[in-house]
Image 1 (cartoon, each protein chain N blue to C red):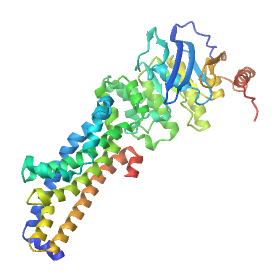
Image 2: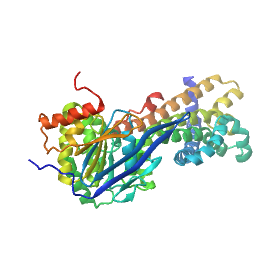
Image 3: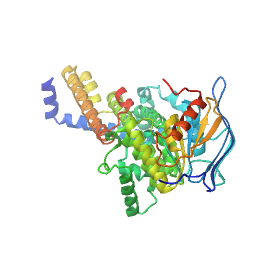
Length: 259
Length: 220
């Protein structure tokens, strides 16, 4: 068993302070995020959990630099985020795969600056890592949703970023593939020590993956509570501690764990 | 009518008229492609410039290309240049609009993914924008070619002394040879069909490779 990952001694990677976001429409301003403050340490796996449409994707887009907040700041490595950066890759659901490139082309998309053989070596490595051997020359339309998702994850990992932003990356997958992909993600995360910010509306998923779960309220989203998940990996999904943590979050959100 | 086509063929007129028409369409259309497509992309890319220029495009666009015939003759005289100009005017605006809407149709996810990997504007244009708009652009290219072929006939009736349009109007004026008129029409239809078939082939090539099921294609 791998020892519990203590809230790491690692330095602060992402610092979010006083973040507000409102979208202006014809009639009024829609407040989406209110006074978000969050610190993420280097190498930490943090899940942002909230109901659909609560603004958690907006939060992730701001941290990634695709959107500018109405107020507040995001600092990564002490530097103010002003735009997207190849050191921090955003994994969209499978929609981010380029349909005009093959699996190889997609995975190598961010490797333009490398020498040719180094590029090919890396592509081959990540093709193997996500189990797409034999599909190198396939176009995305020939792949299943799960395979496309793996292409996107591989494309992100291939550029060796410090930080990964994942926006409900496994939402479109069937439940079996989803479990496999979670395992893969954890394996890669442990092997390569990335900082991961993972948005999901799935309580089980968040408790299975994260070091800490940030529970959001409905819109305008505020942080309701931050739940540390002090369970070692691989996690036993039937252990008492796991179930307690999971049910605690269910209750926090006001859902009885019955149907 | 079949005899009329044979008669045209024997006198060598047929080839001459067909070649004349195709020549004008080729040049007018290619000019329109090389002006209209980049213009549309730029207007969509630099949204503010686009907003400033869009009304101008919108005012000029509804003017039938045929209304330009007098000016074309004034500027370029009776000849190929006039016909090429009219074909250019007729097809350049549909191409501009098609390119603009194709750029507008690029998914924000693909934009963001491109930006995320630290590409320069030029690299994004080449590696994300162009491949992303190609399927829609091909639909626009096909529609514009159809327009160009429609317009060349009208242009030739007035602005030049050769081509299939001229053949039709001349056959009527010089002795009511309605068999020649109909023969000309059949030729125009056949060649138009062949052009459309050729450009569809190009479309299908890229569709097969990328497996695009672009809704714009189905709509067209």
